[in-house]
Image (cartoon, rainbow over all chains, first blue to last red; front, side, top):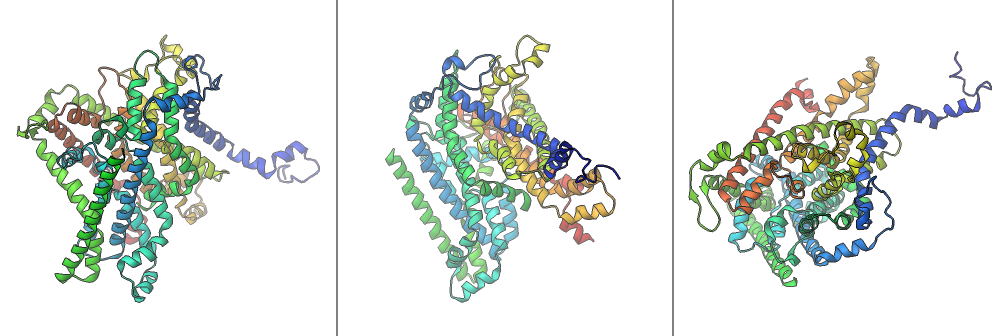
Length: 303
Length: 333
C-alpha cells in the first residue's frame, strides 16, 4: 500500500493533503488544458484590449516603443472627435433603417418558405430544397454584375432598395435551412389538432408553428442583425453620395481612407470609431450569447 | 434623408404586397388546375424563395455568362467579343495568375490551419474543464466583429514599425535576423501570411464553437464500448472522436474553403503594397466597378464560379472516403 491511497492517514502532511484535495487534483489533471486555453483566450482578447487602449490614447502616445498598454492621460475626447469627423449620427440611422427592413424581410420570408419545405409535400420538393442548399455555395460575384444592372435598370442605384427590398425574396438560404430543421421537429399532432379546430395553413403557421420555434427564430434574428448591420459589400456597390446616405460600414471605409493616408495615421480615431461600431453587436452578443452560439452550432451539427 | 427612407419604405411595402398577391394567385391557380390542397399550399409558401432564385440567382448566372463574352462598359450596349476576355485573362493580364495564386494559397493554408486550431481548442474544452461557457464566449468574441473591423485592427497590430504591438513584442525574435522589423501588410512577400494570421484570429472561435457541438454529439457509450475493448486515450481519439467528428469537419471545410476563396471586406480595408496581387473578388470588383469593364469582370466572376464549383465537388467527392455517417453505416449493416 502506498501513501497515496490513505490520504486521511495521520502521517500525511497538510501540504500533501492539500495537493490531494479534489480541487488540486482537478488542477493537476487539467493544468495543461487550462494553460493552453488561457493562451487561446489571451490570443482572442489581446487585440480587443489593444483596440480599446489605442482608442483612448493621445496622438503622441500612438507610436511609442515599447508599446504602452494603459494610456496616460486617457483621452475620452477621441470618441467625440471621431464621431464628429463625419456625419456618423445620420449613418447610424441609415444602418438601423436598412438593418430593420432587411431583417424583417429575411425573417418573415425565410420562416414561410421553411414551413413550406418542412410540412407540405409538393412536386420536386426535395430537388428544390437541394437547389436552395446549393445556393449557399454560390459565389456572390457571379450574380454581382447582372444584379447591379437590374437595380440600375430599375433606376434604384444609390437608394436603400438593393439592401432591403431583396430580402423579401428570402435571400438567406441558411436561415431557411435552420428554420426548416426546427419545423421538422414539431410533432404533427399539435398541428392536426389546430386543423381539426378549423384553422387554415396560415393560422396554423402563425398561432401554432411560429411560437413553437421562437428560440430558433431569435437565433436567426441575431444572425440576420449581425449580417445586415455589418453589410459593407452591398453598401459599397450600391450607395454613392452624398455621404449622408452611407451606412456605417461604408462610412467607416471612407473614414479609414482619409485618416490613414499621410505621415501619421490617426489610429486612435479609427479605433474609437471601430469600437463604437462594434458595440451594438458586442452588447447583443453578451445579452443573447446562447442563441448566437446555438444558431451557428445548429448549422454545423444538423448540416 | 427622410424622403430617402420614405421612398424605399414605399417600394418595400409595394413589393411585399406584390409577393403576397402573387402567392394568393398561385394558390388559386394551382387549385383551379386541380392540384391537391397540400401541394398547392407548399408551392405557394416557397414562392418568395422561388421568385428570388429565378430573379437574383438563375438569371444573373446566365446573364453574367453572356456578359463574359462581351465588351461592356455600361454606357454602350454590350458588344460580342467571343472568348477574348478569357484569352486576356489567361494569357495577357499580368495580375491574373498572381491573384489566383494568392487567393488559392490563402485558402489552402488558412482553412486547414483554422480547422486544426479549433479541433485542439474544442477537445481541450471537452475534457471536463470548468467554465466551458466562459471559455466558449471568450473564443467566440472575434467572430462577432465585422470582418472589416478585424482588418483595421490587424493592420494596427501588425504595423510595420517597431511601435506596432506585434513587432514591439516580438523584437527579440526578429532583431536576430534583421535590422528592420517585418513589414507585414506592407511587404509584398508577407501579405499572404498577414492575411492568414488575421483570418485565423477571426474564424477560429466560431469553428471551435461548432466543433464543440460536434464533440458533444458523440454518444458516450461509444467511448465506454472502446474502454471495454481496452482502448487507450489515443486509440479512443483516433477511432472514436475523429470518425465521429468528420461530418462537422466536412461542413466546416466546405464552408471554410468557399468563404476563404471569396474574401472581400478584409482586403478592401487593407491597402496592399504596390506590386502585390490582390484577392480575386477584389479584382472582379475593381475591374467591373472601378474600371467599368463589366464584360471582363463577368469573365473573372465566372472563373471564380467554376473554381468554387470544382473545389466543392472535389470535397464532396472525397467525402465518401473520409466522412463517417452513422445512418449510412447502419443501412449497410
